[in-house]
Image 1 (cartoon, each protein chain N blue to C red):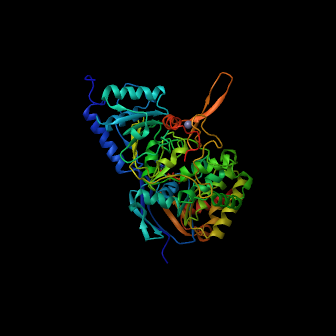
Image 2: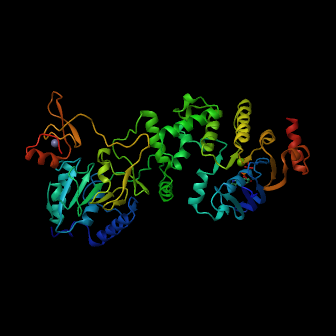
Image 3: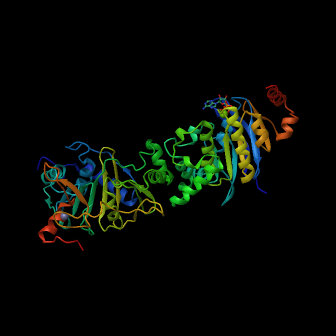
Length: 283
Length: 256
Ligand SMILES: Nc1ncnc2c1ncn2[C@@H]1O[C@H](COP(=O)(O)OP(=O)(O)OP(=O)(O)O)[C@@H](O)[C@H]1O
Ligand SMILES: [Mg+2]
Ligand SMILES: [Zn+2]
């Protein structure tokens, strides 16, 4: 513990990160460049999120880390252990008890509240990347709100597949201004981004970008009037463990014979419902 | 009446080399201006300066904007120029590859400008795209095909549809019929003439094909070595050329 500064990063680095975070909060949805540091884990393991978390942590914090909704996956466990070691903060698996939640690919089912910070790990921050590979040009497009091309991409989806065929990383418009990639969360989670009482921060380590949604920010999923966004998931399934029909489910293989079942991807939400003896629909 | 476009003493050098020099003219609403001249005479340079793609060294380009009347496009912000470029202006490139998105369907290509200015109804966008495919004589059954699979003539017609869909007030065209077979050229020219007449388009068309200006242009500017050597009504210039270079140009065409 004494071998590290609190939360691993030195104070100058944390100050640099906090400046970037403040700027990101001041301009919701705008990607702020920052100089990403080497972290003791490979890119793709959430180095952007880890740096943002490190810059936000204070000794009084209670940290929760999830990967695909689960607290017990390798990635989540190793990041949680890392912060226990370098910051000695309390940790929890309970969404309601956490002051900071670092996440990859999900937003917890339990509604977030004021005072909480949700930190997303982001692989590719630029929503226009696949339409326009030139960074110089995408920056101009954001600056000038030149977003026709983004809509063309959705148009092409409908023309080809009959619907907007985008289940993850579904692009959003922030406060009617910047188009933002919400990281590869399922589109099922997109409505949770909107008007959230929590502060939502996004860190992309390899790409050196931080962006943010301050509390109560308007976040709209892009769509067409006659093909409205819908946050659907696989219909007609309920969780085999807690019976929830409203949570986001993962399909898991249960035996060598190819047996399978659907369970909540949010392990905390599911465990709490099981503990409360609920096998009916969530209210 | 105010000219739609008023060009004053426009000059553009490439280093020490003159691209175009001291060009002045006015384009009135509903008028088609042809610019002819041999290769390297400065036609594309001039057109690109007018359309805001190139920054001239000197001169003014006043465009009669909807909101504020005539404004120098060089004094506009990049944001304002880009807005004009996707609303009131259109630019048809000689090579359709420069003006189309080759990996986007025909419908998406035509719909892009509509979406760029806020259209959000898929059905309406599609209906307008279909309508425009018909107007440029492309089978509506090709709506979801990518232009890669189109012939050169179809690609050029698609580029025209993509440009005209937002009802631009000013169309720039650089050799719109260049690089096409003669029979394909004739069909495209016919189509362009129909559109110009029906829509009352204002346009600046660069070409070195006098047949194109004869059919499309009300007025004509003849360029040589970056300078305008003669301008006037198309028929006048072609039938009674004053400048020795124009006389040569006209007679060389007659020999073909
Ligand atoms: N990017 C450039 N850099 C340097 N010189 C250029 C550049 N573009 C054009 N020029 C020169 O400027 C002059 C005008 O060129 P421009 O392309 O405007 O002619 P043009 O009339 O359009 O010719 P063409 O009929 O071949 O298209 C030519 O001498 C050309 O070599
Ligand atoms: Mg040229
Ligand atoms: Zn469950």
